[in-house]
Every structure is written in structure tokens, then in C-alpha cells.
Image 1 (cartoon, rainbow, N blue to C red):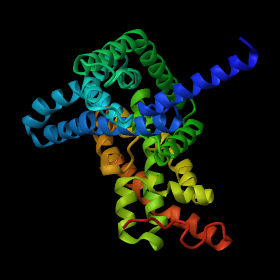
Image 2: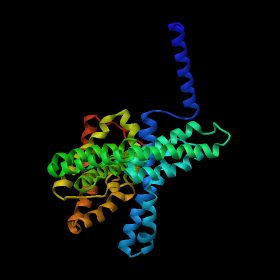
Image 3: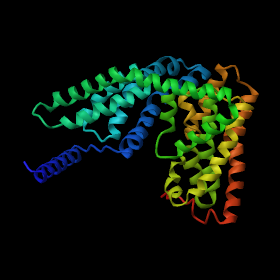
Image 4: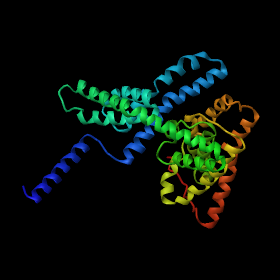
Length: 357
């Protein structure tokens, strides 16, 4: 066979493979895995572990055993399943793959935590999609392949992935205790940026197991982004913008950031200020899932309370820290920086306008 014929066959085979992937809706890209799947994973966490944790806190505080003794343990146990299903949904999986992913997520979570569940669910779902509707016994083959591949991956790499993410999180937390100012700035700004980008800061902090004062700095950075964008864009978006960004997500500003990246400067600067204040002055702490949520649904604030109390830091100083770092400073300081930039012409009229219709 000539060299030209070999090349033609290679091109033909590559084209067939691409067509097959397209038919199976398999897209190997950053968008599909780190934005779609990871973003949906955060919703799976929210619908299981996070909402269960909130109910547990309410149950303990208000003495409602049904919330903290019945719902909380079930929500905690089902976290892996929720991650598996949410990731498979983010990958646009067919029904049988979607349902079987509850098992792959559970296996991955049991062996490697949230990161293990994420990897196991992705590979299980993608292989399930490959065989989906390719045989006459689809109802057996598709869920079987999804489960076998996902559980094998969870068993093989889950512990290593979980250990790596835990070690990374521990390193960040240890470094924050050694260098509370520098790490307070870095953790606050980086996690805040992650929250606004179309990836999940909640999933990231959960995978890292980010707690302690590093968790407090992360919360400060998230609040700076959400509250900051909400108040600095009040002129363009009114109270609807306050609610959608301050209690929802600052991710709504991503299209505007792409058009004018300078609008990101004010909330970043505020996060660089409140982060080290959280680590050095108020010694704020948070849970892994609260660390990456900020004021979204007030979860970051709600999770701060039991985390601080467990560390023996509850009381007046805690409430002052929550009010000052997470709300007051972003509300006051972000518009001041933004107005200065407006006068300089770096931020122009309607640069922060959202489509809220």
C-alpha cells in the first residue's frame, strides 16, 4: 500500500471516529468536562450534602430531630449518587446511563471522595454512551458497562485521586497558617475568581476539603465577587441584579467580563483585602462546601456559624467578622473602586448590564 493510500485511510478512519463520537454526543473538551460536568456536579452536591447540612444545622439549633437525625444522615449517604447522576446529566447521557451513574458516583465517592466520584461518573457515563442502543439487549448492556467501568475506575484511581486532592487541600491550609497574609490574599482571590468563572468553586473546595482559616479566606473571596458585582452594577441592573448576583451567582457577569475584563478588578481587589483580614484578624473558618459558596443562598454564611462554633470561635467576634468581611466591606468598598474606574473611563456605561428578562 502506498504512502498516499495509507494517509487517505487514516483520514477516513479519523473522520469515521469523529462522526461516531458526534453521534454518541461525546465531546472531549474543557467545556464539556470542566464547565458542564463540574458545574452540574456542584448542583448535585447542593441537592444532597449541602442542603442536608443546612437542614442539620437548623435541626440542631431549633431542636427538630427529623432534620438532623433523619434527613441529614440520608443526604450524606446519598452524596455520591447525586454527584454521579448530576455529572452524567451534565454529559448529556441517555436515561439508562444517567440512572446507572448513581452507582458509579457512590463507588467513586466511597473510595475517593467527591473527586473520585467525579472521575468515576465521567468515565462510566462516557463508556455507557458508547454502547448505548448498539445492541438488542440495551437495557442490560448499557447500565452494566456504565457500572463496571465506573466502579473499576473508582476502585483503581479513586483512592489516589482522593489522597492527592486531600494532600493539596492540607498543603493549602498548612501554608495559610504559616503565611496568613499572603495565602489569605491568594486563596481569597483565586477561589473568588473560580466562583465567577463558569466552573464550580463549591466543587473545587469540596474536592480539596478546604477548611480552617483557608476556608474563611475562600468564603471572603466568594462574597467579594458576589456582593461586589451586585452593588457595583446596581445602576445598570437595579434590585433584580442585587438579588440575582448577591444571592444567586456572579457568573452572570462572565459575558460582560469577556467584553471588558477591567470590570473584574474591583471585586478582586476587595477580595485581596478581606481575605487576609479573615485569616489574620477574625480567624474566620468554614466547612469545605461552605467555603466555595459565598452568599449564594446564604450558604457560605450559614456554614460559617457551625464551623466557627466547632473551633471555639463563636460569639460576638464571629458575627462582626461575618457582617464586616462578607457584607459591609464589599458593599462599601467595591462601588468606590468601581466609581473611580468609571471616572477614568475604564468602566463605561452598561458594561455591567445583565439580561435579566
